[in-house]
Image (cartoon, rainbow, N blue to C red; front, side, top):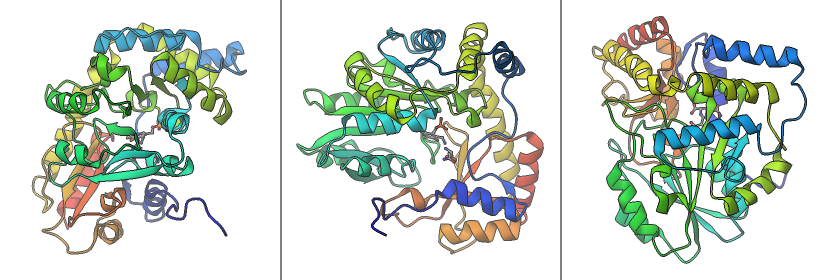
Length: 379
Ligand code: PMP
Ligand code: GLN
């Protein structure tokens, strides 16, 4: 049939999770925790369902949750945002990303995307008639070459998509990157879309470089995050977008016809929990760093090579000492030989460079991480 997305099949996350399940492998592929969010948060959902909070939420999000998000943005990044006109609650970050892109990208517009790129950006750009201009980041550091970005900019550049901490590499942007970015966009009308879903998962004492810290950048940005990552509730699909009022107004035009609104009892529960336990997000770096370190310690004796992730709950590892297979074949071999599922990195590139890298998710219990590392040390 005539297809609008000829390059798109079923996502790598769905495929690898299904394959892991079929082989009863330990699933370190698709990124999701194998543990629950805070009990106090879960029981609030139960409370609100029983109270009858089961009808449509307001289109832009439950007011209490938008207020709590605004308070959090101020507490974490020192930026004052108006909960009424600058915060929108969405069905996961995925919806916020799609709505932001749809709100501003017109046919012929170019959008700069850094590869390896999270897989939902490109289809959203294409469906809106835009053109994704891919800038490949080179392993092992995956640093942005800002001169290369400068050269990729054209009169048609409408938007740049950033993702820090970065999925799938686990890298983070530094203050120097934000300076380069500021210099680059100053005096242009280029918009920014910042995917910051792992904003609270940064390691080794580093500070998350949120766009929200930089007023000159924030005034041209959609900043997207997800409660799925922060509260170990990826299945709830509650995310949000912070953007200046004129951009938010455009985003909401799309949001109201994509989904209109998102789950009421979960929004109410999150609002309570954000107010009752504002420290939760500050405990996340240590929580996930311990998991990263545990998994990596278990992998010391393996033939995989790696540098510890700077953020996210993903660890990239080089398998070139083990196999010469391309990564998409290596992950299938790994499931069969070791009983552990991973994600190949090349699928996140338009034109993958020469590399042998896979991504493991360490948002897992200690037992799971130990078992996985033990299996991976045997191959
Ligand atoms: N962006 C990135 C970089 C992600 O890793 C994810 C989740 N895997 C999302 C967006 C989507 O978040 P959500 O599940 O809230 O839609
Ligand atoms: N973001 C998750 C990951 O990177 C997966 C989300 C999905 O399955 N679409 O693994």
